[in-house]
Amino acid sequence: MTPAPAPFVDDYLAYLLARASTLVSNEFHQEVAAAGLAVSEWRLLATLSDGRARTINELAAIVLAKQPTVTKVVDRLEAAGWVVRSASALDKRQSLVTCTDAGRDFVAPLLASARRHEMRVLERFGTAQSTQLKAALRLLIDEMARG
Image (cartoon, rainbow, N blue to C red; front, side, top):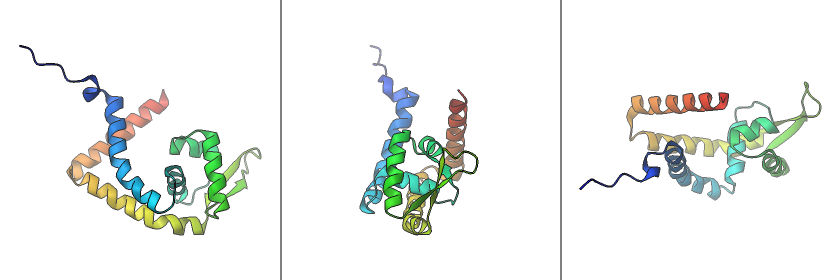
């Protein structure tokens, strides 16, 4: 008797990536919620915490959300005093979003916690395999983004 084939999703890349992301993210997202943030707000603040100004469209691509959603999140974060918008020097129709000092101070403990969470997840694989995993994912992202 031939053994039953493995279920399709057990070897389907898109599912494996989505499942891994969900399992890794859900644990940390509990901390995000405890800090009073939605996941979209966390992603935006984490992205902007490096001090670089970004357009709404750039942020949408980075935080994996649609432009109207990011605009609403920026509105909320701006009302809280954690981000500011300014006119782009290159295109007056676009605004640039930057994290304020208050926003960086607010998100700093979560960034540290996210790094600790990442270390706990990756310690199961060791340094070499963790480095290889991240490199493979970056390569996949770059290749897919090129189309």
